[in-house]
Amino acid sequence: MPIVVNLDVMLATRKKRSNELAQFVGITEQNVSLLKSGKVKGVRFSTLAKICEFLDCQPGDLLAYENER
Amino acid sequence: MTQETISASETLDRIGRVSLLIQGLALLFLVVLPAYHLMSWFAVDGWLQTHLAHRGVHVPVDEIAGSNRVFAFLVQTVPLAIALLVLFWLQRLFAGYRRGEVFTLSSIGRFRAMARMLFLFTLVNPLAGALVSVIVTAGQPDGQRIVVIGFGIPEIAALLTGGVLAAIGWVMVEAKRLADDNTQIV
Image (cartoon, rainbow over all chains, first blue to last red; front, side):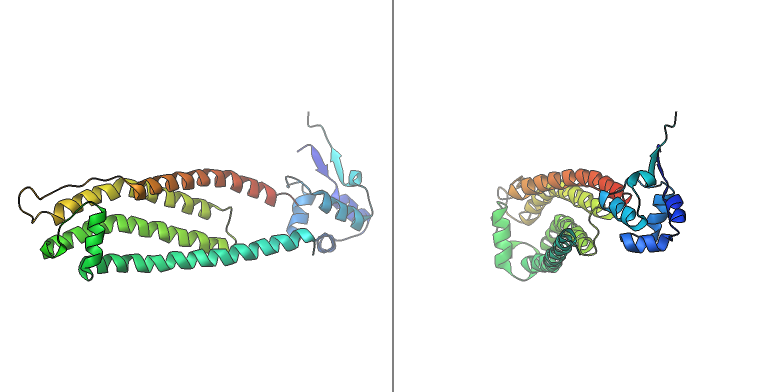
């Protein structure tokens, strides 16, 4: 998957925990775990907005594109 | 709670209420149809007379020998059993809807089961009707024994409904794929 999710990095940088993020965003901890590992098929803009609000960051801080070639 | 989630919740409540009603009706007919079948062959001659007349068989029911009546009843039970299976799967389908099983393999399977039973009914009902006409007129004098083969509105309706349900089953497969994809979107 060329889209890399840097959520674990941002959580560590902001010194926040996954369960706190899950509760704030309104998704399960399992989904947060899947998101961190990049094993989701997509992220809703509403979810992305809530994560950015919680971590006080930009979407670009969370997502990166890596050409697999 | 957002407006979107309130609407989804209201929709699910409505689905639950309608599903309960349809499930109840299906269960009711699961009891009523066999009872009507039994009573028309063995208790209420007027019902049997009307039933046979609709099939083009005009024989006084009191002239049908007891053994022939039993045999014809058993033959006619076959398409009835198929119809009861359709009702069984229908009430299982709506019971599933009440549990939130909408785009699932179970609900798809129930659509396909009902379609298969309706196609089978289309084949079996005319054959059963023909056999019943032979059985009930077997005791009649020469020249009054008949065989009636009919393919009418009940069979056409079953065929069309089976086709629609089969098509819905195919669409549901795609809907399930989309629903599964949706669960992997956070």
